[in-house]
Length: 176
Image (cartoon, rainbow, N blue to C red; front, side, top):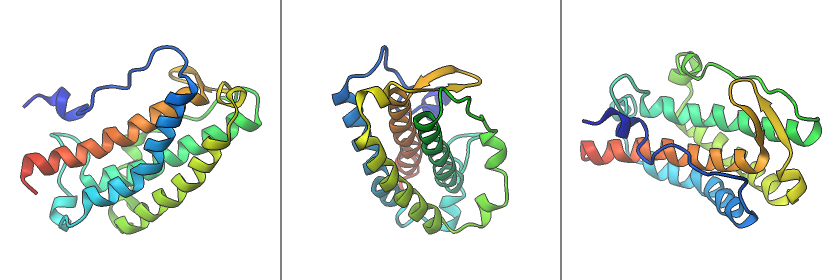
């Protein structure tokens, strides 16, 4: 089994240059659709299936869902900072360590799904309201450098699809 394909079932994020408004609108649509697609992807899974890693040494389905909630909250906050501060330096975090915290085991998945749904509703309203000038605003990521809000929208549209594909490809491989 190709571990690279298991880790990146839809490939890595790939977009060169600054995205045009129609591409950003497409990405916003992807962000809007993710909560329903995620809910459908885990529908009917047993507790044992939810605790199955999507690849060797990978996160479980449960951890993936909780990670999406945490990661997308961080992205939403980065967006707000970039809109209200001049090129703020954001704080990176250790995603793999967060995935080992007790809430990733104890918080019921419907709670994270509802959180993702509500977060995405607010995020989409904000993203749809942004002008081209606002989409060009940047935050500084300490590891990867400056990121515009337009590009960040694409990264997180991809991020949602990326993790959704972890779940759906696992289901397909396992015949669930």
